Length: 288
Length: 288
Image (cartoon, rainbow over all chains, first blue to last red; front, side):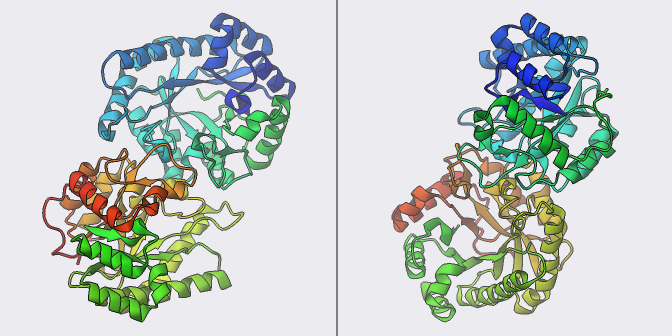
């Protein structure tokens, strides 16, 4: 299990590393903003000193702008994120994964051209992939729940993510399997098997779907066991697909953010043990 | 174009029929609750006197309860809805469609067994289909947006709806194509073509996806043109698939509900003309 830093969003990097390690968790998924707060060099040192593995860096992406300065800024920012991913994974303990999680981006303001936005997402991956490959970083395409298709991510299903990933080398482009985003999909088990067969699963993230949705649907995620997701079915599918990397718990939830970080990590460890039935120890074998 | 009665939710049946006909709209999609308010016999007379076609009756469904009294009540209620559909379509003008729109239902309270809920939905359709066929009614399976998968509809994509419909006779089980629920789906155009080729499209409903989502996501629908949906692409696909039935505008939106019904219908007529590019007059040729 890995604690994704977003689950304890208000903790700074040093605190996040400390409470994670203190709880006996061996891995952490980092976010760029708290890394930037201390600077990449100091962040890498903190990570190295923590003894933790790094399971991923969140996040790059936002690829759907039409050609122009905004798009160039976004691509340059992704280039920086690729380098940060390589640096932080190198600083992490053995088994760290140089995986950069990517969120596609939504429709540009006023646009209804979903097809065009999806093409521009593809073009951005094509532009960045050689640079990721050169840095030993895997770009992790994350399909987000379709309720975010307009304003956050035009990549909406695991099948769509695999159709895109399959256009690129397996070492440099993979996919994220996130229970919150994918649990409803009638094709999800088949697509997880497909992703495993092609070696594309580079991140497995878990949290629950709770109802009613809160006013800000970005914060709709819940602790495993508090909602409607069948974690056994999805975990077994990911296990059977051959994924042996860290399993990140990533929860955007105001009440959880407002709680004391160490208590959140302790609660997360318990909920994970109760709800996510891994068939064997995944931590010793990074995804590739 | 047809006004789905939910767009002017607070109008009683007589008012809804009047403002629709007064606006020169020739068709209406009815809801069971306002029909029940006046009683089926009087409702049928009001419909006949209006001169309007009936494009559908909303709605039956809620099929996911485990076997027991709740499930039996739900199935009996659907039997009543089948009879209401036949009666109201017979009372409507030529070209009326005896189409009963079905919403699958969500997960039972406390359950995470999505697969089981989907199987029980299938079993309910199998139980009701012979009765629909005997009454000349088509059961219209409506895939709802995946954000409702937990609490409202375990039927989440058009492809899933077609996989289900294909198990039954084409005359008695079809599918609804609703822009709000399906616009994000990378497979939607292919699945619309598939639905047309198999003669399964029995209802086409339009409204827009607006952001940010309101606190109650059931009320997230917007007037065509106010949101992010590419109506041209979807309408052309439904046209090309051979659908020539009425196109219903169905909008759940508090501000629209709070407006005066006749003004809503007038606004709907304009938004439809501006945003939904039908290739020919659909009204003369009901779906079958």
